[in-house]
Image (cartoon, rainbow, N blue to C red; front, side):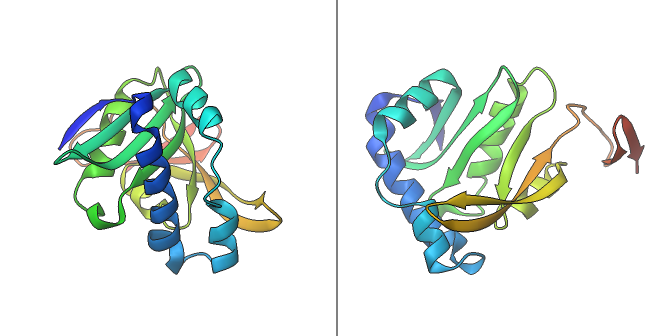
Length: 170
């Protein structure tokens, strides 16, 4: 697997991967109507391109095929998108992308994780700040605001946030 910076030539394949991933991988956690609202198949490619160019955006390829992508707003630490092709789930693609994106963040990283993605982020040391309902095309979808401490912990220790500025190392 190779990871490279986003190129505008990647956009159409990334948009197709996004649609297919949402409609297959997330189908266990969201209704068909919610999936249609989340990924309509009508992406504004110019808006996506501008956003991907403004962020640190990385693309994972294997055999000349895009197998995942992610992007981070390095100014505020927002991990915006992270999607892995349905046939490449649990092969380290998301981990490799996140490792590189998180390393570029100046401090904490936060994201709005789907029900499906929540366990992945929890394993990476993110915790849920809040559960929320977001509206997309008239449908409510549950997601989770999750964040890291921006602190590296070694020797198998984990950080748990107990409150604002209060952490427990276990």
